[in-house]
Image (cartoon, rainbow over all chains, first blue to last red; front, side):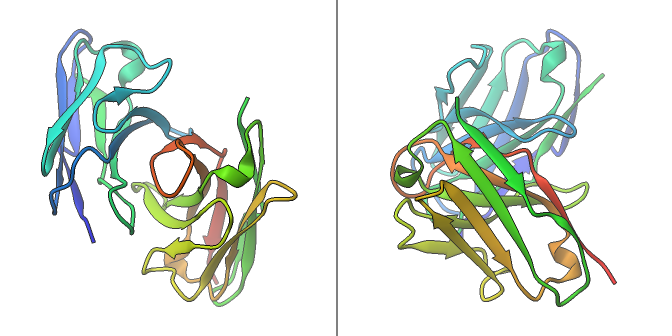
Length: 107
Length: 121
């Protein structure tokens, strides 16, 4: 089974900051990784799939990258709407698995 | 427009059963794998189960294997999760989710609104 470890678990940042969230996998795989944003009381929203492909309608300030076991979600300039919890998810193999989440808070 | 409308949550006692449903519209249901994902109160997302478009193949998390059964009715565009022998640690918000590409497995591009399942004596 592939375990996904996200860091940090909480991140305090200001509007305009560049934010980076990391997801580490217990096994190496290529590109089968997605990122989601979840706001309180709402279902998760897909941001990125195939490691770096932006879902339609998602602002270009979001980007994804990765290599082997380390994957990164970057928000180039944090906006007020971006304060939320972010999750990575591997879909390389079953059982599918999510990272523990990163809460982005207002500094 | 893709819509996933969930029903069936509630409060049950340990050992009891519950069936969740997810009515899909706005896409060719039978060509997409479907999934259940849950979120315990105050915690992160946990994948529960997947079923391919035809219904012929299913996958389960170890924590629910042997107790939960995923199924689908492609004639009615409905996804189900039959949950038996429920335990307190099954308490969560349950989401149905559609995969983003035709075929098996994948990421989730559309989610239901979520239904709450509470297991308590």
